Amino acid sequence: MLRRHRATWRLVAGSAAAGLAVAAGAIALAGPWDAGQRTAERDAAAADAERHGAGAERVGVTVPVADPVLAPLDGTARAASPAAVERELGPLLENAALGDRVTAAVVDAATGTSLFAEDARSGRPPASTVKVLTAVAALHALGPDHRLTTTAVLDPEEDRVILVGGGDVTLTDDDLRALAERTAEALAERGTGTVRVGYDVSRYPREQNHPIGVNTNIAPITPLQVNEGRLDDSTKGPAPRSTDPAADAADAFARHLADAGADVKDGSPDRRTAPGDAERLARHRSAPLSSLVERMLTDSDNDLAEALARAAALATGEDADFDGVTRALTTQLEDLGLPVGGVRLADASGLDRDGRITARLLTQALATAADPARPELRATLTGLPVAGFSGTLAGRFAEQGGDAAAGAGLVRAKTGTLTGVNTLAGTVTTPDGRVLAFAFMADGTANADAAEAALDAAATALATCACR
Image (cartoon, rainbow, N blue to C red; front, side):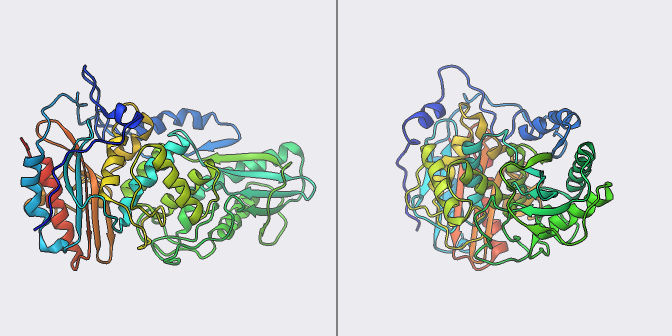
């Protein structure tokens, strides 16, 4: 039998706890969607006007805004009972498909009250659920409006245009072409003649490959790359990757620059650091960080997770490498009052099996993102895949049928999958109207499909439980 821990705990005292406490009057707890809209999508759509008037820069945008489908909650619904939650979850988490190393936690997102905890302070490999922590930490460090910038500068002493990587892995070939066209216009205005092309990747301190190596799940980690170094037309999921995406991006930029009418000297672009007095010719800015976070979570984008973590590291004075990422993310989580005991953040994407996080940390991070006093973190919730409909949950719940089918459209959660590891962390809204944050972590599973079905059934039980 699993050990049960029914003691109620509150989120860490201080500003985080104060923000999560329900006020005497009704509060607007919108849950994972604000009136059904992904707020970052709405904001990015509004930014389209800025993009058209951006002059020598271009601003990235994201997918169209969703129609409203859910009304905000007022936070006054009847609270769930810990005993009732345990009755629902206990038998489901004993499913043999989950192995014998299951940890779990459930909290009321409005109050921080613990409704269920099974070994919730023990560290387990998170797989991609660690991206929830990456999202919260990056948004806290940088703010939801931060953008990643790719810049073309001119070193006039050498008549060299240098493409400076800013960590934007969402840069597309169309973006690069537009950047080259504006660069050519700027060169023409200056009357510049023949130019060489170089590229600058000094934003990161050294060449970095993920410990699992370069494979279909992640490209070499560099601040300059087009479409995450993908060698096909895909925009998400596994794909063949370039072994030198920065050089490939620079080659493409040089071709686009020549096509735009600039007189480009023959030869491959060389790698160099732009001088401090280089003159900016043009730039491309990514979509806002909030939108990037939504994309990272929905698609479980490993490259984007590592890029956002490095942006957070640089913003907090750390190096943009794995050690710097570990320190930066941990510091940001601590600053939010989140419990990092028993936690080791080995990477930002969850591909590293040496990472350890706790179910307690995941649920508290989700509850903090739901805090009405912290709207800057809301993209952590709006980016979660929707069961049976979007992202990494599109093929789960409804298609699986059985006990999980009723959770389609109700569960919003980040998935995590490695060999022998299956995790799920997210939010549900109960029939009574309470938003619950949950985290289920199974380490030692033998059948991934069966483990996923068991986790989905547990999440569905929460979403459909009156739990009184």
